Length: 144
Image (tube, rainbow, N blue to C red; front, side):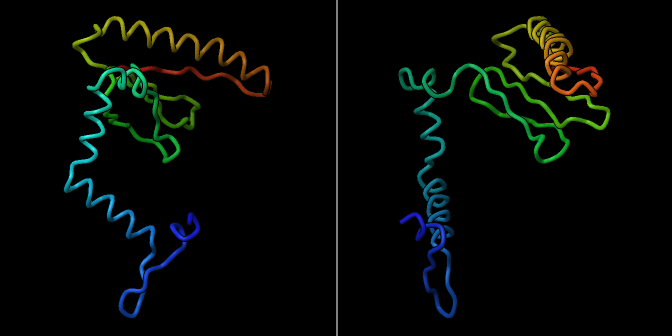
């Protein structure tokens, strides 16, 4: 069954379509017509314990695998921590996006300061223990 879903074809006229293309298009059509994405998000965020069970209170994400760039993360939770790619000078941008209605900016600045201290002290010390030829570079954290 899985092999058919991934590699199967459906004859159409003189050619054929992959089954996975047809299934993907049907899911897209169902989302557009029935609003499934919004329905799932609404259920997860508003029904009983579902928010705590599946969404938590913060998220961590990155696009560093795709090269440098700033991520404009959108999250159902109040806090999102993002980090970028390691630069040529071996520094990394770390950002926290938060709901200003819940937390004051001074508290977030304190969290970023603590994160910067941990990354530049304890984590660097641990990394240098594994690879003594490395020299640490500072991490600069920025809040938005």
